[in-house]
Length: 254
Image 1 (cartoon, one colour):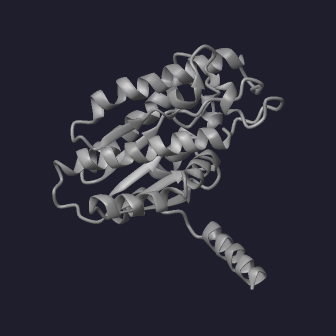
Image 2 (cartoon, helix red, strand yellow):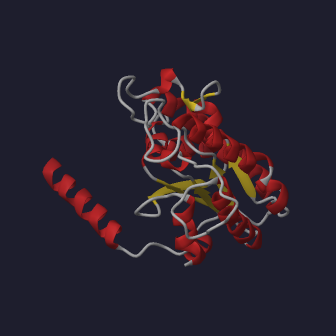
């Protein structure tokens, strides 16, 4: 029986992988809350060149900010949907990037995350439907801009995935942030009743989603029972290949 269940799970995963990815319009139509994040490679940010290239693979603050101007307008134009965005997950201090200096790259990733928190919503959040969750601040050592030592999965290897302690800590705060953001959003959108949430992520996001006590879905069931709400959360590996800013741009703007 266990083998049959495993086979079905694998078959389901394969079918999901080869299905076409939902467009932005399909996500907005289906969900009330869309949560997006990037994984730690997005923290490998190189210096600006004074020339923006939206389709460039080169990760720089100027390119990231230009992409987020398009995302900001997209979010603002869809005012009936709540959009929540993570700040950039930090790298392990031993990780050696292919380009640039790791300390300088990490510092720029913190600068971009601060811009995302402080400047991005000021321009695009006129409909109060954009929230930024500062994941980076929770798990990052502010002295060096890398993953905190106590949250490293391995102290001897450059694995940027945080450990279970970090996932449980961040996950609890993430759940609180979601419910507070929905509460604030619904104050000006009274028509929302059942709240359907989609969390778009890759591996770090999946660990937070799964390791929060019994997992975020169970957390929300307990929350619903206590507060008489109807929040339903699902998650999706999205975009399939990577989830850097340029990948969201290509997926949603073609």
